[in-house]
Image 1: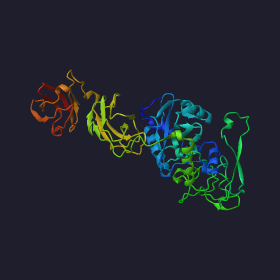
Image 2 (image 1 turned 90 degrees about the horizontal axis):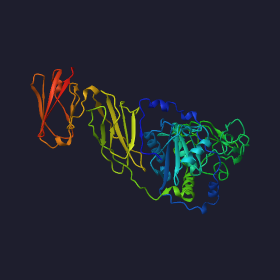
Image 3 (image 1 turned 90 degrees about the vertical axis):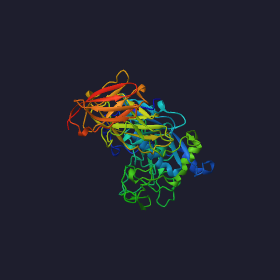
Image 4 (image 1 turned 45 degrees about the vertical axis):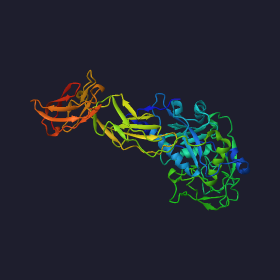
Length: 511
């Protein structure tokens, strides 16, 4: 299992996601329709099931698997992972169910699984990579043409296009994993038409993908009773859940201002109604959905306690995060070389991981680099472009809590490659050697030059002193020179210390 990874996106990153289909071009869900036998037994004999008190939080272990192509490209970005994870926990908060990352994220490079087109390919992916005692969740570019699906013996798969803040596909598929069916069970793959009499029962293919295995095998069918509006058969019809209204809509649908379907439906007795779009288990648009019903919540909690207790933890191992890091080095707007820059930030109480990003675009709409690390510093070893502003930011999180914010971004300016000098034998360096009016000089000192009484002077080409100051001998010193009033030309910096004297010539460019 690979984890704690560096992900270099580059300025072409937007094209990776642009190639992924919109969620509205995908089937909402590929989970095989049907009623879990456990759910039938639960509703038939609820007294046989011991459930946790409704006030107790159930902590559920997740094992996250992030798919990429064979060359490692296209993986779901850390920022999007954290947004989706935060949304999942927000969706389940009213249920008293909270999810946490069991281990660090598993990184899998396999193009076939990353873009799998059939459920059997997904079965192979899950059975090869699943981790015991956790709900396994797989994120890939394509999951058999669906936004997501659940295999109750394996895990859930989610398409990149259907996982972000405001998307509820992950919550929907986890609902299936915890025994919940669709409220419109039996109508999957059918188009409801109010012009036709509504039947009292519907049949459905309960494997949903049998023809991908052997087209000669007849479709395995089951029967569901159609639910009446008055609730007279709610305990034996459709999803067996009485506090979810009848729903016959099995295609993605929009809602009105009250989160009801725009189209009117009629039950077998002719009573009219509109489907409830607030339910996460329906196929309404994400913006309509806000909840699980009370009975759905009770069923999921009972399922966890009775048959999936191996997924549960006693209590959180980590606490919520309320602070954010301070960006320490380089200072905001500081001049830096194009390579060897060390980005440093402060630790945050209860944070175990940090998401670092940097880019040349201040809005961060495109990230050139992302890194998940447990450290509070990172040295950039690649060559950055010279004479550019780079923006960077850091976001803390841990295995239990990801609803955090980035610290306010800062920037640094890379000096031209021709305007930097290599450290001398003493590890002493001064840059840039080509200076813009008002631009600061940076000194880098080795340990032997520290903790001394030091001062600097600047002389023009005629040998006249134009500036002098005492300085604090730290490992990196930023000198703000009054160079805006100096004429263009060559200048000499002289650094005086107890150890000795250093000189550097720099050029001040014209305005």
